[in-house]
Image (cartoon, rainbow over all chains, first blue to last red; front, side):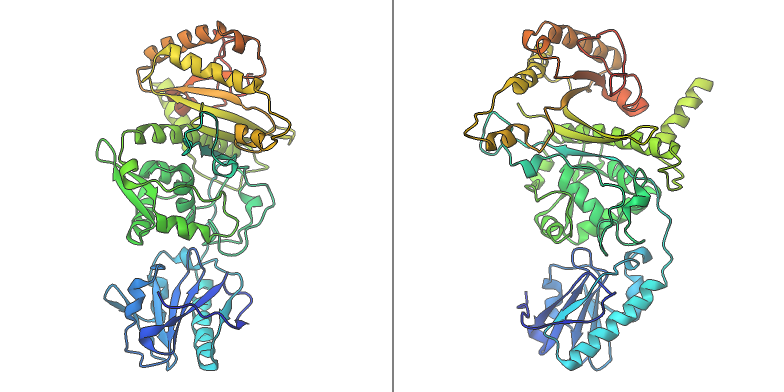
Amino acid sequence: MAAAVTSSTERLEKRSYNHVRTWLCPSAGPSLFVEIGGHFPISTPCIGSGDGSTPCPWWTESPSTWGSVCASACGSHRASRRGSVRTSRNLDRRGPPDRLASGIGTAAARHLSSIHLSAVRQVISTELRSSLRVALPSPTSSPLCRLSLMRRSPRGSSGLAAPPSDRGVSVPESPGRSWPGLTRSGFRGSGDVSSCTGASREAGGVEILESLGQHRLLSTRQIHELHTSGSSIRWAQDLLGRLCVDGLALPTTMPGGRFAWHITETGADVLEEVPNPAEERRPVVTPEKAASPPQVHTLAVNEVGLAFVRAARGWAGTNAARSTGSTRSPTCSVRRRDAARRSS
Amino acid sequence: MIADAILTYLLVDDDGAVSIAYRFVELDRGNRSTAELARGVGRYARLHRRTIPAEDPALGRIILGAPLPGVPGLLVVLAGGPPEALRRRRSIVLALCRADPMLASTPEVEVSICLLDDLIERGPLAPIFRSPERPETDADLLGR
C-alpha cells in the first residue's frame, strides 16, 4: 500500500463527504489516492497528475476495492479495476444509484498541491452533482431490538468472562438521534433515525456488514429479512455478492445448499472505520468455524432475534405515531398466512 | 454458564411510556437432556445470588457482561423437534425448574420457555411463554 500523506490538511467542501484520505501513488509518480466516504466509499477516486492513460497498478493492492475512479489532473479520467476502464462520468454505473446518494458530510484532503487540489475538487463536484440527481427511496420498516450473541470465553472461565463491550447489550437507537453523513444506512436520506424508530430504511453494505459482525453468522434469508425486506432477495444477494467480491464477507454452505455469511478480517477492519459503531470489534469467525456444526445453533439463535424484529416491525406498523409509512413487513406476512390458514 | 445471547427489546406502551426488556436467551435444540437443561436454567438463579466482593467492583461487570440494570430474565427457546415433542420437553423442564430450590427461592429470576416455531409464527407478544410458576398458563413476553 502506498504511504499515507500526513502533513497539512485542507478542507475541500464542507458539504461533500465524511472524510477524504489521500495516499501517495508510488507507481504513478506524484499522484494521489483519495478515498471518499471511508468505510463505505461513495467512490474512491485516484487523482493522478501524469499521463491519463497510465494505469494505476497499485489500485488492485488497495484494501478499498469499492468502485473506483482514476482521474488525472490533465483532465483525462481513467480508472483501472480488474481490467476495466471507466471514466468519472460512469460513477453512477458502478452500483445501485442510492449508494451515491447520501454521503454528505465533510471532506478533508491532505497534502494536496494546487493542481491536485483542483482535480480533487473537480471530481468531488462531479460526484456531488451525480449524487444529487439520485432520487432517494422511501424508508421501510426497521427493527427495534438487537440481539447480542454471547461468546465463549477465550480464557476458559466458567463465568461470563468476555469483556463487557464484546457481549454487551446494544441499546436500541434512541428517537431523534441523527447519524452524521454517510453511515450505516446512510446511502440515502438525511440519516435521521427519529423517522425510523420502529421502521427502518433499506440497508446497504455497511448495515449488513455490521450485522454480520454482530451476529457472527447469518443466512441470506435472515439478512434479507433484516435489512432488505422491502426489496427482493436478489438485492440482498447482490449486496452480499459485492461484500464477498471485496473480501469483506464470506459465504459458507449450510445443509441444503443455502449460504450463511460471516465477516472477514478485512470486513472487521472496515467496520472499525464506521462512525458510531454499534459495538466494538468482535473476534472474526473463521471460515472453518463458520462451516462447523455449531453454525446451526448460531443461526437458530439469530432466528430468535429475528422473530423479535418481526414483532417490532409489526408493532410499528400498527402504531401510527411511530410508523413511517412502512408498507410491508414480515410480521404482516405471517399474519396474512395465519389468516389464510384460519379461513381455509 | 454462558447465555447464547442477550436480547434488548424496546417496548413502547400506548401511552408512550418506554421500557426496555432484557433477556438472556438460551436456545435448546434438544441435544442435551431435560435434566441438564433444567440445571442450566437453575444456574441463572445462582448467578443472581452471587455476591460481588466489594474490593473488586470490576467483577460485577464481568458477571453481567454488560451495564445491565440487573440480572435479566431468562428466555429459553426450544427447537430441533416436532412441536408435540417440544411441548412435552417444555413440561418436563418446567417441572424440574419448579423442583429446583434455588430457582424457587429466587423469584427475581424470571424464566419463560417457548417454542421457536411459536416464536416465529406468532411473535413474542403472543401468549406463547410458560414459566415454572404458571406451567399451564400461556403468557406473552411480559408475563401478561
